Image 1 (cartoon, helix red, strand yellow):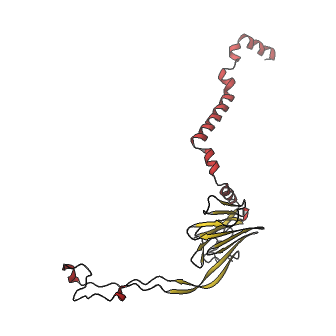
Image 2 (cartoon, helix red, strand yellow):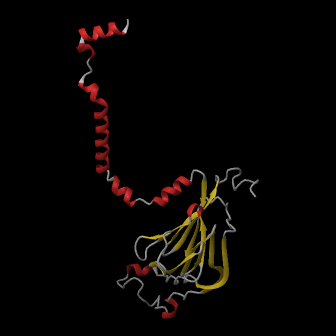
Image 3 (cartoon, one colour):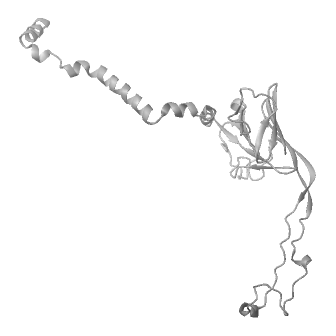
Length: 257
C-alpha cells in the first residue's frame, strides 16, 4: 500500500483517523495535574516552612557519612575541672586517647559525698506506745545532737583534667571549666560559660559559627574536617576522617595497632 492509497482511505473515513480530544491534550493536561498536585502537597505538608527551618549543615554531614566517619569527644564542665568521654561504641577502642585531643592535668580539690547520718535503732515495744515514733524514752534516751547530724563532706585531692584542646585541621577548640576559645584559621572567638545557664561570645560571631538566640548553644563548623557544639554544660566535637571506621580490623581485634 502506497501513500496515495493511504490518503484515499483517510479521505473516505476521516473519523477513523481523527485523534480524540483527550489524546490531543493528554500530555499538557497531565503536566498541569502534576504541577497542581505538587503545589497541594507543598501546602498540605508545609514544605516551604520545613525547608526554611532546616539545618543544612547537618544535611552536608549526612552526605559526608557516605565516604567518612566521625569520632566524638564530649568535654563536660565541672566546678574546677573537666571530664572527657567518648561514645559507647567509639572507633578508638575501650581506652581512647587520640593525639588530636590534648589534655592538661593538675591536682585539684573537690568535695566528696557527705557520709550518711547513723540510723537510730528503735525498740520494738515502742510500736505499741502512745508516744510518737522515735521519741525519747527511759529505754532509748535522746541521742546527743552532735551524733545525729550528718558528717561534713570531705575534701578530696585528685589528678584531673583542667584544660583540653581539640585540633581539627586548621581549627582548634581550647576548653577550660568556664571559658571556651574556638579558632578557625586566623579567626578566634572566646565564649564565657555560665555553667548550666548561658554561652556568651565576647565578640561578634563569624559566619562559621551560629547561635540562634543569645545565651544558647553555639554551633561551630570546621568544614569537612568536623563540627562542634558549645553548650552551657559541655563541649561536643565531631572530628571527621576519610574512609570507613574499622574498615580493615575491628578495634577489639588482636591485630589492631
